[in-house]
Length: 120
Image 1 (cartoon, one colour):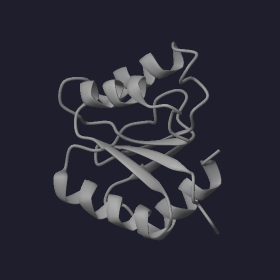
Image 2 (cartoon, helix red, strand yellow):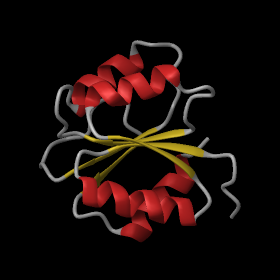
Image 3 (cartoon, one colour):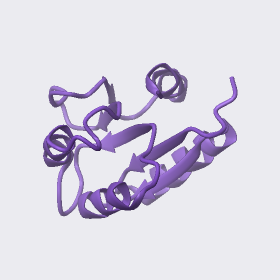
């Protein structure tokens, strides 16, 4: 499938994992923006024109965690409709509003399927 023109915002603080996922998604044809902290993710969202088609969100982040980011997304009409796939190594329920929850370590095929299914 052609994913040209589709942008994913990858919010991940593990630099190695972020690099691997960025490379994988770029190979699949997605444009990938990466943010390693919650504050950087919000800055990226607010300065992106157009906004990303999908957000891949780690829950455990420095500065602002994924739970707080989800709250801010749903309260802002500019971002409320962007699909969010949550990833985490912690055992917790997905935050309200997440389209899908994927436990780490990630299975790459499941991740790619989830992104394709939810990328608007």
